[in-house]
Amino acid sequence: MIRINLLKPETKDKEPVVAPGAPEDVVKKGPNLGSLIFLVLVIGLGAMYFFQQKAFTRENTLLETARAEKIKLQDVEKKLEAQRIARELLDKKINLIETLNAQRDMAPRLMDELSRRLPDWVWLNEIVFDEKGIQIKGRALSNNLIADYISSLESSPQVMNVNLVASTQRTTQGDQYLEFSLRAMLEKKPEPVPAKTEPDAQPAPKKKGVK
Image 1 (cartoon, rainbow, N blue to C red):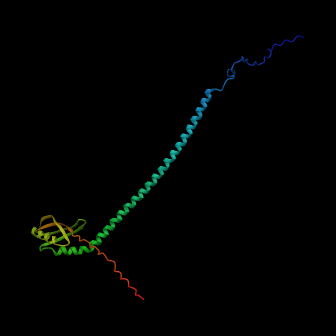
Image 2: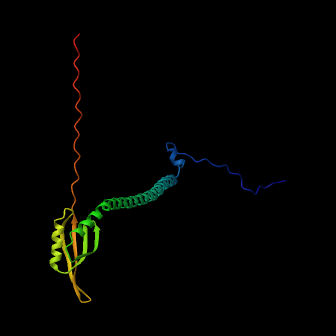
């Protein structure tokens, strides 16, 4: 009996024949250089992104801190401004009280002085005290009487720089008179300088007797 094998005979893998003296790089393929470069670029970009995100986070934190400090400073400025306004109001009240206390004793004496120096046929209607001095309003029958009153006030020890501001003629029920307004300054007397007290004289030391 005869058997016929129709299959191809098995072939063994043939090893590549290396020519004598040829380098091994020709036979074995080295690693892919493009893949290595791509991997390095990916790693570099990732590191750059990481550091940039870290820097952005730090800057945002500093910005938020600066904003919070700015809000605190604004609150402090508002409180300081409120304290400044309150201090100014308090200073004004103190100055007003001191002025009123100073004028409390001066006003009666000044009213007596202004009334005592009035010539006949001259009347006072209003006296106003302010920081610049006093304003006197009244009536007189003639300009000569107003001039006499100004001269009398100039000789007063409490009033100085008396000036005529206005003089207007009026007629009421057939009677003619002059309405006048004067401006004057108050005489400020210098405060007495306290005398210097000399130190008490020390008693002379007693001499010890000789035994």
